[in-house]
Each structure stands twice: as structure tokens, then as C-alpha cells.
Length: 375
Image 1 (cartoon, one colour):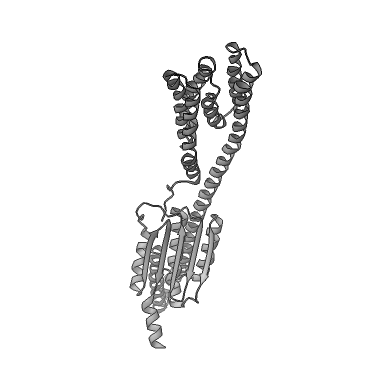
Image 2 (tube, helix red, strand yellow):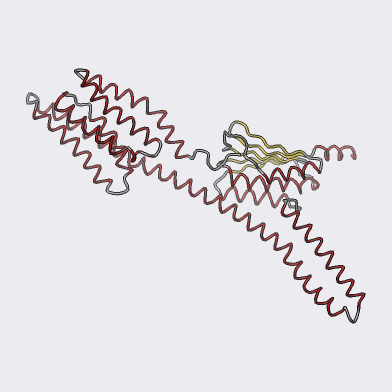
């Protein structure tokens, strides 16, 4: 079953962006160098801006762009005026605008001011081209000011909603984790309630019978002995029930467990589908209910499931959930203890992981054969 440390949706989206857009970024950077460079040292300086932009993008994909923001901005910001005044190329703004578009939306505050500052810097540096070129003023302004500013404004305008989108994804993940934790807490509360039901009533009765036995010991010894015998039997039965509860062996109602599992999954945002191939035999329903309860807890605690399919037949149950981790199966002590109980009753409990899915299945072929033979 997948653990909580499987890659979150936000990380998957960033990794997808890296896979899809890194080649495009690399091609664009090479194109800038090829189009604008006149000499080999021009290519070296322009290439430094491209490398800085690629480094910033890789760290952005890892969610750590602010760690490299200052050096990458310094390099790309220096390449742009070099290109304007020395090389005469109008494409090198690519580095500084791209790094700025990645960094500005991630700033904790003053993001709008930073966006205007980035745009103003690109426009101001581009306007310096008029100091070294006087032939075609309108053409120079279009190439070095208007086009870079327009592209910068458009990309910045897209990156702000992109940042908000990632924030929403993270909020949904955190909300789902809280729902799963609450579901587990509710399960623990239910366990405590079951324990109280077992022991609370018994202890109250034992208290009353002990007080009665103390009164009867001098006036009716036989009655007092009878009361003490009932106390002993009651305590023994309570110890047995407590052990069964602790090891998930207490008799459960499968229909109630099925409804409870559905409610827990839906509360955690997990879609549930139940297939009833046949009515479950009462003899098998008790242990199948225990399997369902334990598996439900494991999915909520360990998995990042989005879908669960529960299939019931007369003598078996199968629970399939997605979101399974690729690592080896984790140790599931609850199911391991329950497996012993299932095997002791002539059943089989299997746990499998395949193609991102986790399958828990229990069946009682031996009991089915016995019923068929009797028929």
C-alpha cells in the first residue's frame, strides 16, 4: 500500500512541467545564442544567461527557485545590457525575463512591485540601444523595448495564476491529509467506544454484585457464593472480549462496516464503488467485516488513494485501491495478525501490489465446499 511519502500532486505537476518544457527552454536558449552571437566570446556571455535561466527553471520545478534567485537574476540581468550595447541582439532579454517570471510570483511580499520593476528594467535597458544606434529609432524601440516588455508582461500575467493554481493544489492535499487523519481519529474513538461498551457495563455490574455478595456472606453464604461465581464468569468473559477487540477478532456486522467504510472514504475525498456479486454468508461475514475494517484504516493511513473498489461475494471480499507506492510492501501488522485468524477458520488472506494498485482479498473456499457438500 502506498505510504504518505509518495510523491504529492504538486510535485508531480512540477516534474511534468520540467519534462515538457525543459527541452523547449534549452532550444530557445540555443536559438538566442545562435541568432545574436557574432564572436565566440559573445556566445560565451549569452550562453551564461541561458544556463542561468535553465538552472532557475530546474530549481523552480523542484519548488526551490528562491534559493538560486539572486545569482540567476544577477547573471541574466548583466547579459541583457551586454547584448543591447555590445552584441546588438534583441533576444537576450529571454534570460532575465524568464528567471524573473519564475521568481517574482514566489516572493512572500511586494510581488506586484517586483513585476513592475522587472518590466521597467527590461524596457530601460532596451532603450539604451538608442545610445549606440541612431539610424532606425522606431525599429530599435520595437525590437529592444516594445517586444521584450510585451512578452515579459504576458508571461508574468500567466505566472501569477500559475502560482495560485499550485497553492490550491497544495491546499487540497493538506485538506485531504487532515481528512484522513480525522478518519483515523474517528476509528480510534470508535475503538475506545467499543472498549467502553465491553468494560464499562461489566465493571458497573461487578461493583453491584460485589456489594451484594458482601452483604450476603454472613446471612446467606450459598447466595453469596453464587454471586461470586457470576462475577468470576463475567470478568472472564470481559477479558475474552477485550482480547478479541484488541486483535480485531470481535464479531462485526459486515453491512455496518461496509457503510462505515463508505462514509470514511467519502469524507477523505475517495470515490468508492461497491460490487455485490452475491449475498455474503453470515459465517463468513464476521471475518470479512474485520478484513474490511483493517483495510479501510490502512488505506486512510498509508495510501494516497483516489478510488476504492469493494467486491463482495458469498464467501469472499476484495478491496482494490489506487495510489500504491512503487517501493516494497510496507509491514501491515494489523492484517498480518488478522491473517492468522482467517487461516484458522479455513480461509485465505492475500495482499498484492501491482501497477500502482493495492489489492487486499479474503476468501473462505473451505467453508464454501462444506456448504456445497451438505447441499
